[in-house]
Length: 329
Length: 273
Image (cartoon, rainbow over all chains, first blue to last red; front, side, top):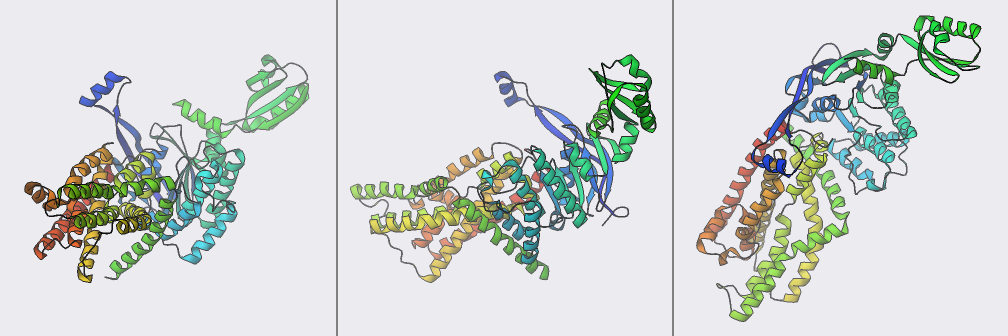
């Protein structure tokens, strides 16, 4: 292993540019495109650096087109970086050495590696052969995955007959049968219902816990990130916006909490202003932003001084904090 | 040396698993299988045409009914074994993102595609063989005077022809990393090659200039050469030339593929996911 200490993933000044053919709509533009093509350079990832230690679970967040998937593809060896240095488990991913490929996995929520016309078990058996998983280890891993992902009835059904959630669970099993040390997960819960998301999340948490695996996870569902990762990396426009713990992100970018009250009568901004920053008012209900350290006092004063029917204190949703970080620049 | 043996053993295990899945995959659609079989029967249609010609006008360039029947019955089987659908499978995989999954596996993409093709060939052959045997019995004039030594050479020629077809197809498939036209370009190349391979007509019936060209081009290796060898129409010098040309093109395309593959990986944009 190269790098400092127990760093398992090193990203140092990673740059990835794409040359994209650009063309206006219409027949005329199509004909012109035959003779002369216009290309634009898209800077998908533009000089980002971060390290991830062995066994760490990191949430990788950013709006669509931020460069998350491109980064994951560079880390898994699918894309050659335009510049910069990437190391995973001491390997240069772009060289695609079998030892490296056998120790990682990339799960893409909207793509599948399963044979579409065959039962998922066929893909599992091929992966056993390709990754050279010994039969006893294969059986043990499969048994564990069948229980954790509730695959019992699914193994001998044709993949195209499975629901999205069922397919995703089989997809994860196929990606993890060789028990990789490093998991790159790109939207693993995309399109799943709440129960489906929770099942995958629970499974990933126990896999990370049991195996000590290193995980870099992108998701549009903040619940995935808060449930699994203690550290987040935020990127936008191909550049790094934040790298640190979730707790610090909340403390720095949301130094207040939300006090939600219901009054016995119509609430009005003027009466509530002395207690905090009024975020919203609707009939008898209002939400106030109150500095973290004085939340308890303010709630007490509200109960004592106003005709309050109900009061609750909430943290600002992480979604809102992240949105604010991206909106700020 | 141990390293090489170990890598070969690993690859053999991987092939066993991959070919097994490819067989299951090839069997998954009855309709697709029927189309593959119908395409494979094309030489038998050509045979009927030639048998009519001989029937009406007598032997063509010394070829009798029995020669044509023996040639085309074997051609149906040999062509089925040595053709390749890889360009189209490869093209689909590039467009729909499956290529990314292949690239993530610790077994070369070349081997993954080759095992896929082996699965398709074996399944189609299993269904085609009884059809061709019945056709041969019905025609009644099919005969091969061939000893074990020549049969072994024919088998070797077929194997090399298959590997050459696949390597050539995969070299063309690499164009898919730069352009969306790899399938069309290959069709053009293959269409030109169909005349010079012996698939449409035995090469002996072509004008001298075309026949000479066919001898040094790669197309004959997959059809005409093994068939002429089987029918005993080649002397030892011709056999040596046939194998030399086949091996030469195989090495050439393997080199082209190897060089192109490295450039293709740098170029890969991992679209569709």
